[in-house]
Image (cartoon, rainbow, N blue to C red; front, side, top):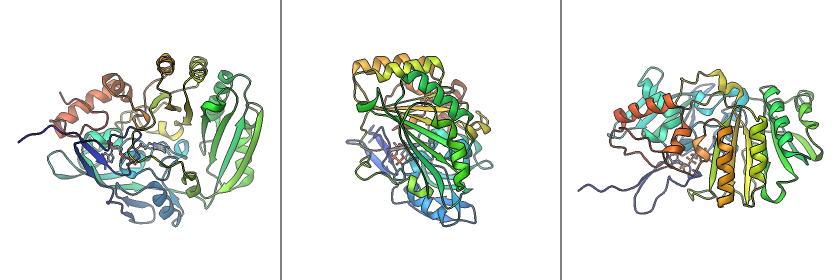
Amino acid sequence: MHQDLPLGIFSGGHGISGRSLNNGGIVIAVDALDTIEMLDDSRIRLGPGAVWIDVARTLAGHGRALTSGDAGTVGVGGLATAGGIGWFVREHGLTIDHLRSVEVVTADGELVRASADENPDLFWAMRGAGANFGVAVSFEFDTDPIGAEVGFALLVYYPDDIASFLQDWGAAIENAHPSVTGTLMISPADRRTAVQALIAVDSDDPDTIIERLQPFGGLAPLASQSVRLTPYTALLVPPPGTDTQHGLGEPHGHSALARHLDPELARALAELLASDAPFILSIRSAGGATADVSPDATAYGWRDANFLVVTLGGGTADFEKRWKQLLPHTKGMYLSFETDTGPEVLARAFPAPHLERLRKLKARWDPTGLFRDNFPIDPS
Ligand SMILES: Cc1cc2nc3c(=O)[nH]c(=O)nc-3n(C[C@H](O)[C@H](O)[C@H](O)COP(=O)(O)OP(=O)(O)OC[C@H]3O[C@@H](n4cnc5c(N)ncnc54)[C@H](O)[C@@H]3O)c2cc1C
């Protein structure tokens, strides 16, 4: 008997959309596959159920790191099949750029290894659209050296003009040393006034850190500023009480990528911040070494994007109208922060030639569309 049931793939349970779980369907839970194993001085094998804080702690013991995201409780499986935009993205690129091979259980139940030499097409698809092609059960990554501590700054600005501040922030990030990665957080309570900036600098030399932070000091009046040396692992520990994401699909999220925070986008972001809806706007660095990899090399294709714009919350008609008005000033989308679905959203997730290639590969590797919990690609 054939039943058309939802099928979710669950690793770390931190999918913002909550699609790794479902009601009345099937969930393939691989969270128990949480191996973390150093294979030599720099290469590491990870199970999909391992979480990034444990990966970082293991690597720290070897003077190594693998850029992942900003939350250590996120699982390897979901992040390493979508992209991985983390604290060292401008210096080391995406997490998927360090992937050397992945073992996948495909739609026909086979265990298949994909790498540059074995099933290279599947390897291409797994790096950005992995959830459409199978259940990843083991990953091998190359890692980068890291010092015992890195610089981390927390600045609170009170800009007079938010649109012009955003442009200046964008320019400062794009011109910063590659070791510098920054995130802006603007929350509903303080959106007209306070902007929180979190900046990581991959150096353990205080003078170098201060020098690389200089351009950020004068962007707007500062309410407070602090800089500290801290182990990279400490950046991944979520503040107490904030880690409530377990496949819940809340809150509502939107995502867009942008090459520059140009005047049009900065104005549209200021308009979004004037919405009456409660939400958090986060503007994260992408770019840097991400662009060292050819756009055609992986299913993630937005290599020229310097910024990832994310909203969490919102959801009112007014907010949605303002978000839609902003989209023409962006190019592409990182699917991990988007909770909307449908062809329009899929078309923003991948450049057109990538989507075309993904459809062909889907027809080969998953012709019946078994894996469809997250941004399903139509094989036809
Ligand atoms: C608090 C928080 C902070 C975050 N910060 C960042 C960040 O800084 N940078 C960043 O890049 N992302 C970030 N994310 C997004 C995160 O990378 C994605 O939500 C990711 O999908 C979570 O992976 P998971 O395994 O924990 O989730 P799950 O809920 O287990 O899985 C999410 C989806 O990933 C797919 N998937 C999961 N496991 C597999 C597998 N083994 N094989 C194939 N497909 C699979 C499925 O489609 C599944 O629905 C953040 C998310 C949260 C909640």
